Length: 237
Image (cartoon, rainbow, N blue to C red; front, top):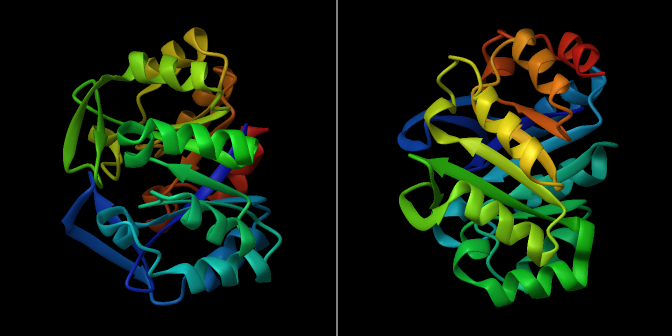
């Protein structure tokens, strides 16, 4: 299982939100590139990034930081947050990003999603963010009409190869991840699933690894020292 330590970007800084609430934001670093280098020094090969400003308004205000991390480290970089056009997908990929994550656009603009998957294949992932059993959109501020399973089935049928599933109720809460959710998804679907939200202990990592998931994202647990990244990487293997 791959470990994706995470950097959430806002105003050029590395931050974390509590359960997706922009009013509950903690700034962890003024220099995200240093954090990315720390990930790499501890043995990480992947990094998960979210542009929280982009998630709100569909722009790429933190592109320069993403570009710097993609080009100045050996990390495999995936980025999400407000990617709503093929132009934006292309911009990220041309600047060294390895995979882009579509969220709101995957729900609201099926033609765009299909075009992106057709043109870029494995370089496209879809973020499936769950709130009360339904897929949330627009930076988690709205709920769509899709249940988690219905939406994942639709993504699989369209040809999406990577799904990053977040249980919003667990995100940043440090109360453990939703193992039952990932167990069900891994048994039901053949796509590569990455667990996100609430991964807060080495026990979580070991449990997720047993489910044969593609990956797991570590966010707040890294920043507050609850998970040692080296230990997590070892446990995931």
